[in-house]
Length: 363
Image 1: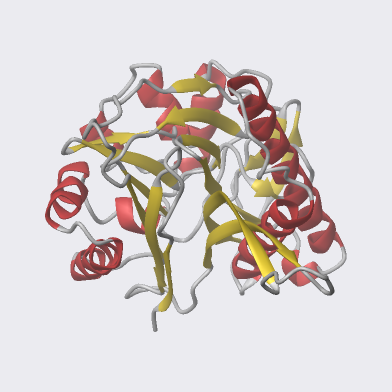
Image 2: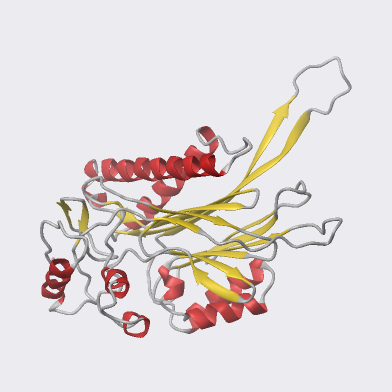
């Protein structure tokens, strides 16, 4: 059964974008449970007047708004993954509400600080999940991917861990903003295999960076992306990208202007293709009311700050991890993996540009 959360904000001040967004998560056709969680939130600043001698309304709202979008794909089995992704969403939500100074006028340098603050929140989520697993044997080793985007005015901050993805759809073209923190993702970046081979490779789900695990050690990738009216943001778990190609996702976003319709179509197509995993999708469209001059803001280029490399690697669904020199090793393999996977993992780790992994093993 789908869990859905609509969200639309209007009447934005001239220096901000109008945001229309929608999120949906679906169990898919094969999985017994849904280990994905997501969040679509609008942050508003308000003052509630308790008493005054003026004829004032009971509440005054600020024109400043922030928008937060988040997808988390849990792993660990036996509902541990569902628990891990829920903890991650809860920690980030608490951070946005109680810590993030989102409503202040932000300059470029301060946006870098916001990205750093979100990295700190991801590290807090990492520690929270590890601690929860340490106190409950059924949850030990659980983890989650985490991909979030925070919009303030016309600047998008993206923070990412794992193999869920963030995309920007602009002028009919779809561009992936995040990198896949997987063994295959590293192989593609080193030029060892191409994109077509990567979609069929046995190691394509083997995660190299995760929120949680047996020990703390997450390293989040961050991006600062200026956006303009007409752009669309897509966040999704790998349950979508495993089933649909880049071209198919692009075609849906070209044909469906409304976020709710786009989300529904993407999930339906993923299930039609087999729905092998949980499917979570968020689509946000950025608009601007017509300006007096009728001009459209230029589409600027994105700025990327890379994540720290990890040499650890492992399964996307099985529990079993060992602490490495610079990260958490998810090296357990599920029943759908080949018998020789452990040896191949070790070979990949030896070749990896991110050297320093203590060991690889298969359970």
